[in-house]
Image 1 (cartoon, rainbow, N blue to C red):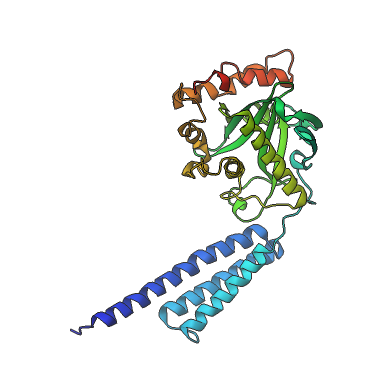
Image 2: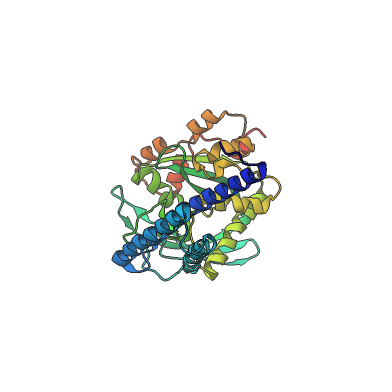
Length: 355
């Protein structure tokens, strides 16, 4: 039996680990490349699939050569793959987000505003008249807002695929007019559907929608039958105005340049977190519940943004609006004010919560 020294053993182990690491790199990077080509289809439906097949053969060849022997030399084999992968990265990250696509009517218009001090005129606020079958009458509005009249802030979570994932909206109460909701959404083109996988691969631009509650909350609770919760949170007037101004900052950014939506890093929950973090940079710890967004209310409770006068289960029970929004359908007068009042029935407002 042949014995090897410690130095030879460590050398062999190091080479083996490098070999394994490079093999894993080829596997996972090739999966990413194939998914990016599948979603983007840079050469059209047919030739993009041919390109995926070519890449798979190429990757398997490099992997097989590297594991068993080498084509030219191991370093050159590595360089060949890295050059090809870098070329794909250059193509992918040069794909521009655009403003001029054939958009779905729900996200067709871009927000804009003018302001004088705390007086803001906000254009292209969505206030569609939704029907139970999902059809709607388009209506876009301009509202004149006084940020000194903000009287409360609400986090709305809407669940459509289990308890782990929720869409997050932020609704601002005003003492002199109907609430206004901001929602970070994908900007879908006509006949395009949401895809969480596509959201990882630059399939959708990002859209900031400002809407009436009877539009954007009603369509989730009453039309799509999602499970919707409304949580009035504790926030000072100064913080509420600062958060509103962060949304206006996002309006400016999207006016200047289109951005990509990303399912993981640039979505409805993480962007709200970034806005609040900008207000209180030292007070908000990062947490897995910002990714597993269905548990965002639990995170808010731990931060004491939701009053501890009630338990988390009590908050979920009180915040659940679907029964109240369903009762709204029986109202003789179906106005924005009546809908907003109905979904808040029985909810403690921040000034009623124990601090």
